[in-house]
Image 1 (tube, one colour):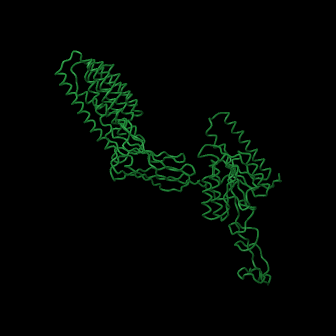
Image 2 (tube, chains in turn brown, green):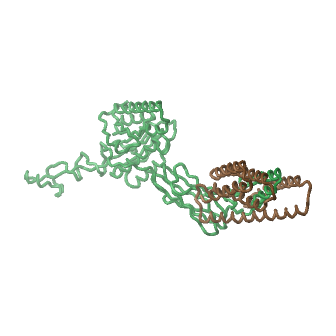
Image 3 (tube, chains in turn red, green):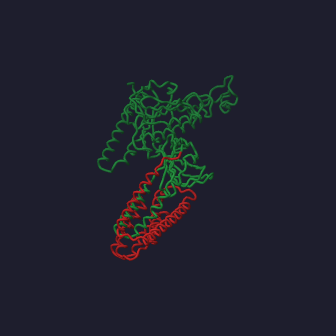
Length: 171
Length: 425
C-alpha cells in the first residue's frame, strides 16, 4: 500500500506539473487522462503506466509549447527523476502485491530509489550544464538537425548497449 | 538460467524514445532533459548480479500427518552466503492445499549469514499425499531492471488422511466371531451378562454358584453368562467411478464414511477389513488395533478412481479377506452396474450385507445452472436411484441412501436389516 501510495503521488506530480506551466483546458484534460491511466496502471500493469506517462509527456510538451519562454531545465530534470521513480515504484508495487515482504525490504528499496533518483538527477544536471556550455560556445544554424541526429544516436546507442549487456550469467 | 532484462527496461527505453521524439518535434530542450534521468537509470544494469549458489533454503512443516480440514504451518528459512538485493520466492500450492494465512509468495532482502524466516498457513482440503517440493525463485536487481530465475528443492510430504465423520451408533452385525469383543452373543460361557442357570457339576467355579437358586432348590446351581464376542466388518469401497468435483465427490464422501465406520468398529474391538473395488480388487486384511487403524487409513489415503477393463468376481477374494461371518458394508454411489453385480453376488453367498449409498445428486446439483431442465434431470436421477435401491432391496440387500450434506449418523439410524434373503442367481 505504501508503494502504491508513493507511485500514485508521483503520478499526481507528473500529471499536475504541466498545469503550473500553462493553465489550459486541453492540458488539464490530457493531465486528467494521464493521471487516470497511471493510477489504473499502478493497480494493474506497468504497461498501462507507460501509456499514462506517454500522455503525461504529451501534456508536458503541449504546456511548454503554449507557454513558450526560456527553458526550465532544472524542473525538467526533476520531472525526469519523478518519471524514473514512478516506473520503478509501480513495477515494485506489482511484484510486492499479495507477497510477504521480508524485514527491511521496503526500507532498502526506498533507500535505493532515493540514491538512484539523486544520481540520475546529478547526471541529468551535469549533462544539461555541459550542453548549455556547448550551446553557448557553438552556434549552429542547423541545430534541429543536430538534435534529431543526437536523439537517434542516443536511442540506437541505448539499444546496442542493452543488447550487449544481455551477457550469459557468470555461474 | 541467466540474467535477463525485464520488461521494465523496455518501458524505460520506450518513454525515453517518446520524450526525444517530442523534444525534436517541439524544439524544446526540456523534453530532452526529462529523458536524461531515465537513460542514466539504465546505467545500473549489470551491477547487482550474484551467483545462484549464494543462497539456500530449508522448509519445515508443523505436521506431516494431518486430517482433512486441518491447518499446517509452513516455515521457510532462507540463508545467503553473500548479500542478495531482492529475492522473490514462490511456492506453488498443490490442489489439495488452500492458503489460509500469510502468502505463498515473498520478497526478501538477504544479508550474509543472517537467515530470515517466512511463514504461511495452508488448509488441507482433500485427502492424499501432498508434496511440497520445488520453490521457485527469482533474483531481482534492486532497480528491477534485471532478473534471474532459479529454483530450490526442499522436499516435504504431507499425508492428509480422510476426516472421519462423527458417528456414535454403528450398525450391529448379525454374526459374531470367536474373539472377545463388545457384543453380547447368544452363546453362553465367560462374560458379564447373566444368561442361564444350570445344576452344579464338578469343575465349576465356586464364584459362579447362584446362591439364591441353590437355597431355594436345596442343591447347587451355577449361573452361566452370555459370551462377549467381536465381529468381522468388511468395508467394501466402490472406486469404479465418482461424481461431483473435488473435494466433494462421491468417492470423498464414501472414504470419509469408511474412515468413520472403521474408527467406530475398531474402537469396539472388532476386526475391520477393507476391499477397494475398482474392477480388480485391492484389499486390507481384517485386523484390529491401533496399527491396523493406521493401515486402513493409509489404504483410504491412496484410494482413487482407477479406470480398468478388468472386472473380477467376488469369488476371487480369499476367505481370509472376506470371512464368511463378516458384516459387509458396501459404500457406493451405485453409479456403475458392475458394483451392483458384485453386491448381488455377495448377497447370494449369504453375507450379512448392507449398502451405504452416498447420493451424487446433492454433490452435482450445485455445479449445474439453475433451470427447470436441471431440476427435472435431478428428479429423474433420484427416481432412477430409488428404483435401483428397490431392486436391490427386493433381493434382500439393505440399502441406506445418504445425502453427504447430512450427518452420516442420521442416515444410519434409519437402517433396518433386510429380512428376505436373496436367491442364488
